[in-house]
Picture 1 (cartoon, rainbow, N blue to C red):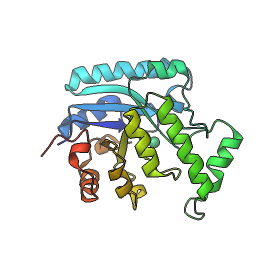
Picture 2: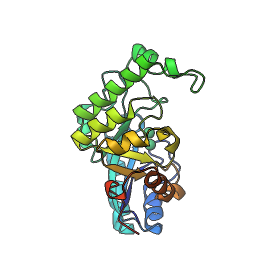
Picture 3: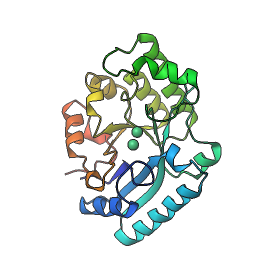
Picture 4: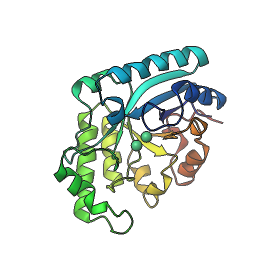
Length: 239
Ligand SMILES: [Zn+2]
Ligand SMILES: [Zn+2]
């Protein structure tokens, strides 16, 4: 059983369902909480208006379903300095902040794009160089240290990084390292480093469709099988 799913998307960005549909899906799976964390570069394109609508939808869905629906956003780490693509004002408005690298999000500058993504543009065809991995690791650690991030999303997915070093920085700052149900393969060969990092974890669906909200069992079982103690997975609340 899980308390909640803290990384879900709706039509407010690139998801297919509404906030209410995600909340009903969570209820059907027995969850008590969900966070709606649509992409910041969709949500804040024209200021705070859209986010405030999402927030009102979350309140309404909470009242209708009895599931606590938390309004949030997923920010992109969009520069090598580890900056997030949200302004101070936007960050202050967001109740639940998830962050990670996204190759489809607009980077801060051409130079950031080149250094972050050009080298891995043909994903799978070119191996990530040692130097690129070091740059990515430094950017994520800087973001973790600087911002009030609750969950570091899909570590090692869009861009490769030193998983152990980033997870250690998360442990020091109290940021949860996500076990993302969609991107488990990115932790292949990294589970030992994660287990040793001292970090706490959260299993999330990263659902883009209501039917995927709360589908967390397979990811949880894989993490435990790979040596992560269930007591370190904060949204797991026993059989
Ligand atoms: Zn993401
Ligand atoms: Zn996401």
